[in-house]
Length: 117
Image (cartoon, rainbow, N blue to C red):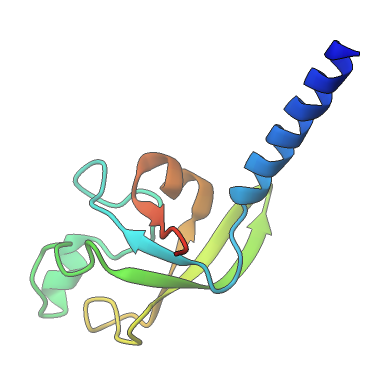
């Protein structure tokens, strides 16, 4: 009986942890600093593209911004999300939304889920 209770509780914990890792439309995330020089899992433009468009070659304007999940879709067992800024402004004054690989961006620390209060 003990083994049965432990097994059932383990399955419940696994199920709940999986349910918390799936994004939903309306989730609020925070953009964190990239783990390397560039963002690998959020499709922000390269720095040279920003310079060509007359912007400063830095990701500093997006670090710490709150973004909202506008769309969630799956391709080849990978979950992608479309992100828009929470205040409605454009990223770098150019892009209204960006696409990101949700699980990899969360694992690498490029995105962080805002805890509901």
